Every structure is written in C-alpha cells, then in structure tokens.
Image 1: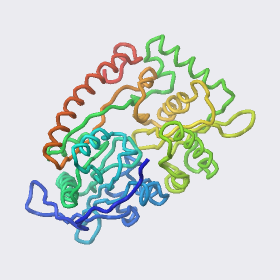
Image 2 (image 1 turned 60 degrees about the vertical axis):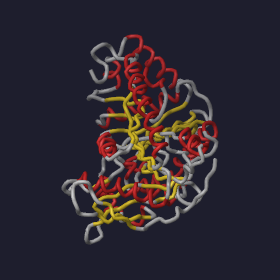
Image 3 (image 1 turned 45 degrees about the vertical axis):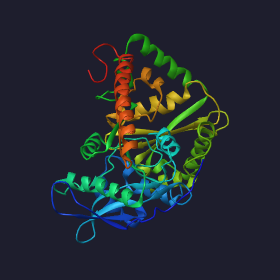
Image 4 (image 1 turned 120 degrees about the vertical axis):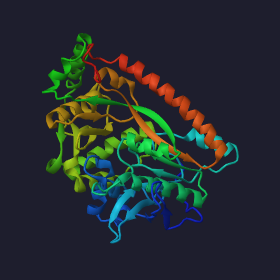
Length: 411
C-alpha cells in the first residue's frame, strides 16, 4: 500500500471564497489539525447528531497517528471564522496521495487519467477517514443565518485550493443528500452508491420486529440466533464507564485479524481505539464475546452511537464461529437500537447478505470536481450511467427483503 506525503506547490494558507448570492467574501483558513480548533468551537459547528464529525473522533484519528504524516491523509481542514476568530463553519478536509480508506472508490478514474498522461494524485478529500457513514461534511453553526452561503463558500474554497495547487480533483464523500444537491448545483458531479440500513419504527423488542417478517424468514433468523449463541461464547455490550483499556486492547487484536484477511494493512492504530474509550466512551457500544471455557475474549464488534442511529463499524474474531458475526454485528445492534429508541442501524459498506436480516438498501452520495474538462466529461458519463444502475439495483434488492407484504420498510 503506497503511503507517502507531498505538499502541493502554490498552496495558499488563506483563500477568498465569494458566495453565489452576495458580493461579500468569506475568508477561509486552512487548519492543519483539528486540535488547532477548540473542541467546543468545532462541535458547535458539527452538532451532536453524528459522532464521526465530532472533535473527539477526528482528533483521535490525528493524535493516534492513524492519519497524518506517513498515512497519505494530510489534514487540510477548512474554517470560516467570524470577526473574533470563532468558527462559523468548518469542513474536515484531507490532501490524499492515494485512494485507500475511502469506500467510494476512484481507482479506475486514477488509472485512466494517469494512462492518458495526467497526474491524479494528490487530490483533496472532504471525508471522515476510513468511515463509510453518511453525515454532514460542511459543518455550520446552527445559529448562523443563511447557512447554505457558508456551505457554498466551503465548497468554492476546496475548488480554489485544488485549482491553485494544480490538483486533479476534489471529492466530498458520504455527505448528506442536501449537501450533495448543493454541490451539484455548483457544478460538482453527483455519484450515488448504496448501503444496507435497518429501520426501527418503534419496536418494543426483537420479537416485535420478527412479527413483521414472512414466516420462513422469521424462523430462519430465530434458528440463526440460536446457533450463533450455541458456541459457548457469551456476548456482552459495553458502553460508557464499563469500557476499560483491556477491552480495547482485546478488540484491537480482532481488528488486526480482519485487516490481515481483507486488506493486508490496518488503517487504525491501537492508540486510536484507546482514545475512543478515553474521549467518547458514552458514544460507543462495544460488543465483546468471551469464551465460556477459557474466559478469554474471542470476538468483538464496534458501534458508535448517534442521536438517532447506531453505526456499525468494525468486526473481528480469533476463530470462525458459524453465524456469530451476524449475531454480534446485526442482531445485537438491533437489540441495542430498540432499547435506546434509535431509529436506524447502519451496518457499514457492502453485504447483500444483510437484506434477509432486515437491512434494506439506502442511497449514499458523493460529489466530485474534476479539473480537466475532457476527463470531467468522461467521469460525468460514468456517474450518470452508474447512478441509473444503482437505482435499479436498489429497487430489485428491496423487493427481495424479508418483510411481509405491507410491512416492508418504506411502505
């Protein structure tokens, strides 16, 4: 995995970005670390709905060395301050020298552009590293009037930054639908993907959810849970003060086992997980499995808690236990969401096997600015065709969901 860093030539520390609707210009500053912004000021812009854009999460990535020098993710966050220097708006932004850890993959774009003689990297990426979770990327304080003007200013500043530095492109991945529409109105190319989410309309318990399923699917899930819990492994869900450093050290070993199998090199360090426990334990739900005979931890699933959703992130196990992955990652997440009154469980990227367990396709978004006109035209054709195929695929997959007629999510 090529990890290297470079500074773009001609980069400005501050750019003037005029909004579309006014002659007024916003001064947009480049901030080299989230920690350079006071946590209260950053979070006043980020809000409390999505934990991944919080100061605690983003600073843990930086302070643990998961992003920064040597990682290929160099922080270049944007900030629009008021007259007193207090942020009105911020955006998590990175200079990228590869396309790893993004989950909206553009390898084919990079290969095509470089085969044609262009230089695709470095590029700018507005994202939460290693996190395929939809959430705000253009973070504006809620008390600011006409907030879309600041969002436009952040987007315009990204383009100006990339243009001045001679970079090929700007990418905003997993933004909200509203942010994607705003960027598309400014000329960004809109790409659509899909994930699998589970909706909780207010179930009283897991049996209440099962009652909405076709009989065969209901029996299948009950049998699956029974088999998953028959391995002599006891699962517990830990959050808040119940989380201890020993739990994180155990989970890191499970994370490494998954990294070894899937992509060869772990993105996240052990210090990152320890910092999660130190900085935002109340927003973590960690499922750990203990072997009943040895008393040792043998598997784990990490979830983060939002205001309305539970976000499944990482899973790992030291051995293969039939169906235990589904129990720890999907069904225990449902149990937790029902108990907490959370409306959604987002189970991460990929996995059509989630459909028969109640997780149905939902759209995700990304937007892309391409500097080269000819290359932009080719990418525009690609994303238009891809968007149509994704929409058709989502409709077909939803029809094969496990819900009884009239009970399916969205009906």
